[in-house]
View 1 (cartoon, helix red, strand yellow):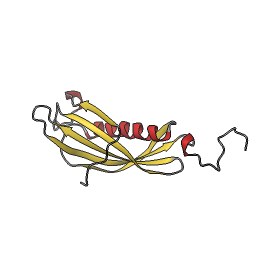
View 2 (cartoon, rainbow, N blue to C red):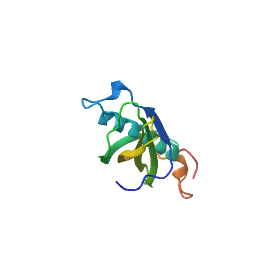
View 3 (cartoon, rainbow, N blue to C red):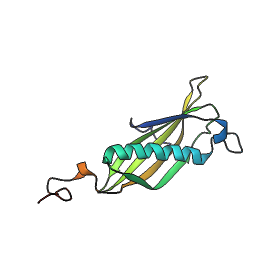
View 4 (cartoon, one colour):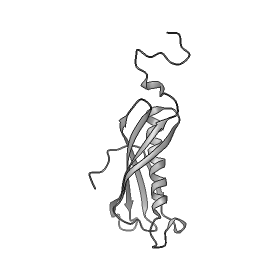
Length: 132
């Protein structure tokens, strides 16, 4: 895995028994859902309009996440298009008893604004409904 993502919005949670898979570690789908929420916050702050997840890729599970671990999903917008954004998300797992922290999951989420983000308008574009 490459270097951790720079600071951005962080979503934190503690892993409880109802989130575990048959091996006794965090279910991968629960980790991806946490990552998607973090990507949503980062993209929403960037666009300041409604956004949806169009897809995800490059999801790598490096270390299992144990029950009782604190998990933090940190998201950063890496690329911005006309209405789309690429958001990198890293999940750090922390053993609350020992303080050991490890990068557990990493992936990229593709978020799309449902309408043109207002602050992305250039000086040559007039806002919708405005006189030109």
